[in-house]
Image (cartoon, helix red, strand yellow):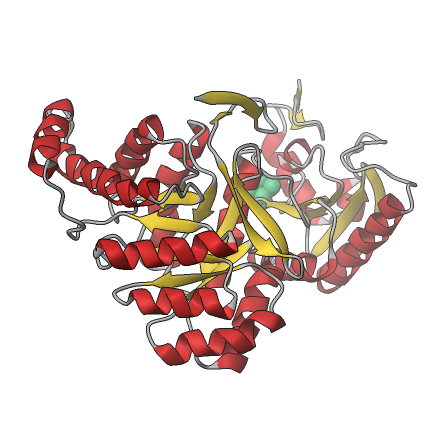
Length: 432
Ligand code: SF4
């Protein structure tokens, strides 16, 4: 079930899945599965019935790069609000439905682009059929999110559980996996009986190892597109590792068609981190600047942490192209590590030297670094857009600056430390 779609690094063979499409002529269409790029989803954190705030949040998430945004519709006033929200947003919207199948029907009626059903709390076959039929008539996909709650009973459930239990007997999560697969099969039966295939599947957990095991098993059994996620991952500070480890593992194994990272924080971070994960794995073409920066050390003589944050925010606002920007604390490792950067700044004694594609363009005091660096990034962006420069094309080797003259005592300090063991050249090799 694998096909030859590879990532930008040529390292990942994505598993072939069916494709679903969500959207409309106005917001555009997002394909999920098959050979479509892996999409990034998130969910609003505010009330859907607060129309103005909801529209604002959706548009903020869309601007951050979300391909799809999900909203909660716990009450009738939320599905009613969708009628006002949908015409004002620019991304496909998914209605997240729990407990009340009527909310799904109302959301579909309002024009939503996809429904998420929870098999754990919408179990009645007739109700599920109603939702399937309503989606079918409007060509809307449905995501089935499996969890540990009970779902539709079927006569051979216990038998199937036993079979799967034996199959998973050597797996730490065997019992839980058997439950999830059984429930998924049961739920899918209803969809198959209705001849409905516009399905995506998710099987989230807070346990990263279980997430890996579950999606790996599901991907062997079904060819529906998979929506990856770690649920309730916690605050961003720790949730990033909890999410990125299993999602990265699965994506590197070719599993996953759309992802949602979930944090107890502003969902903009979920979008940014989801995109960055895909960029790092070469699974999406980068939009906007790529920022690299040194961690700083005892050689630092500017406030690089503040500068890096300021540069990050400015680049997000001003740069559309995937310009590689390096913010380096000094010239010890900086030039080697910044090699390939289109625009780079090497800091010294409260100063910074700025290079554009290897060519030195400025030497400015610390308080002017941000402004000048941004100016150079913007001007480089315009040159690329006019066809006068190419991204990633290093025209001139970075020549070590006359450090004492240009960067001040920083380089002098380094030089004296290095004397006798060799001075680093700006291509990262040591001069011996
Ligand atoms: S670039 Fe310079 S300041 Fe930054 S970590 Fe490397 S040696 Fe330290």
